[in-house]
Image: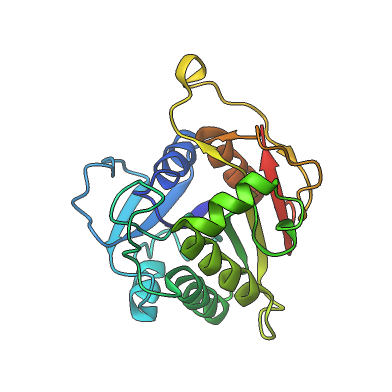
Length: 234
C-alpha cells in the first residue's frame, strides 16, 4: 500500500516507519525537519517538508509521488511536546496541536477521496477514562501529561463530529508505552484489544512500542476497527 505518515520522527512513528518499510509499503512522510537523522534513506520513502497545521503542506505531500498516485491510507502518530521527557516539564506544543493537525489531515484527505485514517491515541481518552486505574488518573490529572490527554480528547471529538461520516478512522488507545524493554527489547508481541472503554485495564499494564507500531500498520492494511476506538496492551 501507499501511505501518508505523520509523526515519522517521533518515538512511536520511527517504529511505524520501519514496519512499513519492512513490509515493502511506500510512504510519504510529512516532517518539519527533513534533515532529521531518524529518517532513513530508502527508495520507498519520500520525505516532504511541512507542518500538519498547514493544509497546503498536507496537500503538497499527497501529490509528492505522481508515479505512485495518491496514498490509500494515512497513519498519524503525532504527539504533543514538552520541554523534556519529565511529566512535569512545560508544554511546548500549541493548544489543540493534535486536534487541529488531525482535522486538517481529514479535511484534505476527504477532498482527495482518501478515506482510511489510523491515529495513535492513549488510554484514558473519552469513554476509556472510567476504566483507567485510579493511580493512572492521578498521574494524568496532576502532571503536565494532562495537556496531552486534553488534546487527545479534543482530537477524539474531532474525528466523530458531523461531516466526518466518510472517514474510516480508527483511534488506537495505548496503555503505558514501553520504549526500552530491557531483557525483552526487540520482542514484538501480539497486542490484546480491550474495546473502546478498556474494560479490565490494570495499573501494571503496558505495551511495547514496536507491538503498537505493527498493530497500527496491521489495522490500516486490513481495515480493522473502522470507526472505532480500541484500547491495547500486551
